[in-house]
Amino acid sequence: MRVARPWSIFSADAGIERELASGLALHPLAARALHRRGIRTVATARQFLAAPLSSLAPTSIFPQMPRAVERILRAIETREGIVVYGDYDVDGLSGSCLLVHLLRALKAEVQLVVPDRIREGYGLNPAGVERVLGLGPKALITVDHGVSAGVHIRTLQESGVDVIVTDHHQLPPELPEAFAILHPGLLDPGTEVEHLSGAGVAFKLACALFEAQPDRIRINPRFRQILHESLAFAALGAVADVVPLVGENRVLVRHGLRMLEESSLPGIAALRNVSGLKSRTLDTEDISFSLAPRLNAAGRMGQVKLAHQLLLSESPLEAQVLAAQLDGLNQQRKGVEARVLEIALESAEETAEGEPVLCIADARFHVGVIGIVAARLVERFSRPVVLLATHGETAKGSGRSVPGFDLAAAFASARSCLLSHGGHPAAAGLEMRSDRVGELRDQLRRFAADHGRNAQVPPLEIDSEVMLHQLDHRLLRDLRQLAPFGEGNPAPVFAAAAIEHASPPRRVGVDGSHLLMKLKNGRGDKPISAIGFKLGSRIAEATSSAAIAFTTRPSTFPGNHPVELVVKDLKAARAATQAGR
View 1: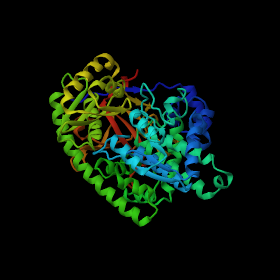
View 2: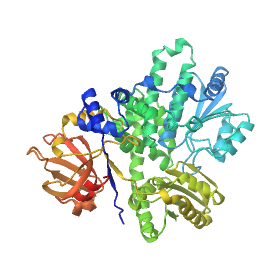
View 3: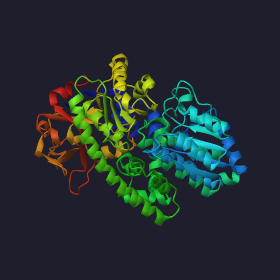
View 4: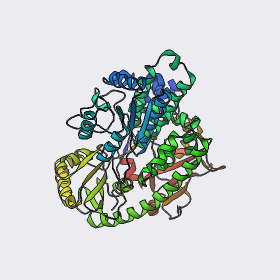
């Protein structure tokens, strides 16, 4: 059953809005969008819109950064082996490949190890530790994991391997006894770097290593280019891991998107080309829906090596072949995901009644896609979802949550029945014995009863109510300055009440899952196209008395109105205009 989402319409201060609009020569609706993001002065707005690289926090903000840098430089100087131990998702892949590129340029003896998602699971694990020790390194750098791997880090340290942890996941009660730990959670709250992704922390380490080089290296154009290329990897990781695009992250992604367009790295160029993004301006949606899924497909389908081979490739021909293979794996992933979603939906419909957390286990689930499917079920049922792929005595699970329900803390509360767990409040994973799934359900119910009162369907935040004739080229141009859009800095959402149709709405797409409308704009000009992705089933609600909430984008069809709408929700006009009042 679909849960109606409340709308909350921002109540602007007219004086602040006028000051921003006049001081920056902005469309009033763009000024209001700035105001809704907490920006109240022209000076603050200019800094936000410019997002200069010079605003990045110094690498010294991490207390143990000098210790980490000194150890890595000593390993390079004495020709000791270094292992970069990454992860199989885009954030971990991007961050680890970023460091490998730089370390290779510094002539380090470096090798990359990435765990197999299906056979080994997340982060440091017994098989991974054994593999590392077989390589004989003296230093190991984790990327996007490690802070919860105390047992494995102790084994490595006792075996003569100095472990440098770079991570951003939730801190455990007790930190591992690593040589050095670089983690935003160990800094004072409110710093510009508190929301860094795993690739973002790796980028800070890369910057610190670069800063420690003699002048002849720091002024070398090749080395400077490698550091700038690192921005592309930082952007991939931040967007794919859905970290808030505020503060430092917004700066990294803003400049990283440009590096993704201009990158001379064969792997980046081949990935962009196979995704149909050659010679075009990129935005965060291109990462989310085109680049990241292809990289993620490698890990999800048990062939993670293809992804890091692509990102580290120095041959355009090899990169082209690898990118084509990733594209094929992504197509396979879509088929597997569709089958798992069908099975999970059937179980969810049968068990959802009265359950605060949906926890579904099935031997037919593919461990590589259960996280994506869990996210789909959260959208449908508006509550936390945990899916477990059971194989023999072991079950591997992935969960997604809703605002107000800390899934990582929920798993921690059930640690007595788990073999391992970790993650974020919104997304977390676990491993356990298959015969204890019922116990996990009971523990999650108890946690929800004690801590789930704040879990709720988040309101759709509306920047402003508008008349459709207000939407024009100038607004699109000015709104683009607020990008990159994503978690923490969403694209401005507008609401229009009592819409009028220029032609009857219809369902489109191969399976009719999308909703297409042609709307009158009140000025007699060309009608405005509005597409509602995954809203096809709600066509009956798309009457002329409806209100719509939407974002804007340039028209994709020549001859149409210059603005297109991407519909986020629709409801009775009266309900919409009363929302947030």
